[in-house]
Length: 40
Image (cartoon, rainbow, N blue to C red):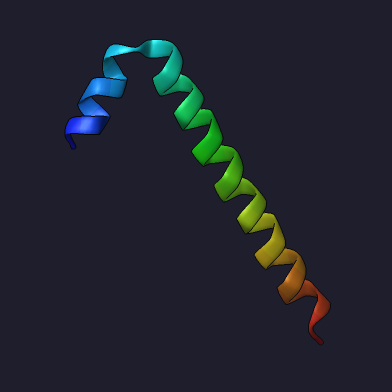
């Protein structure tokens, strides 16, 4: 939690981290969905 609080002090870094995590989860969701669609 300390690291989170420190990164919150730097808006640029915090937003970059948020963007990174959201894009990663989006890619994972797309991968999982495509995998399930491929299965009959």
